[in-house]
Length: 73
Image (cartoon, rainbow, N blue to C red; front, side):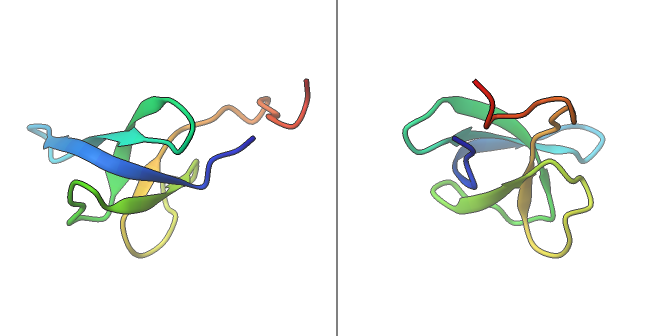
């Protein structure tokens, strides 16, 4: 089953300005994602995307290869 949102547990900003965050997924694993936009705070729920240009606002970018199909066994 695909996850649509993740909750920010903690984040860090790298020297080049890239923001990484550890996210908890409801009934799922913890993941590390690159954040797009700015201003994410711990406890904030963010939409997950595999599009690095997802639009305005803060998103958690998780690159997924196009050959992955979570609906297949």
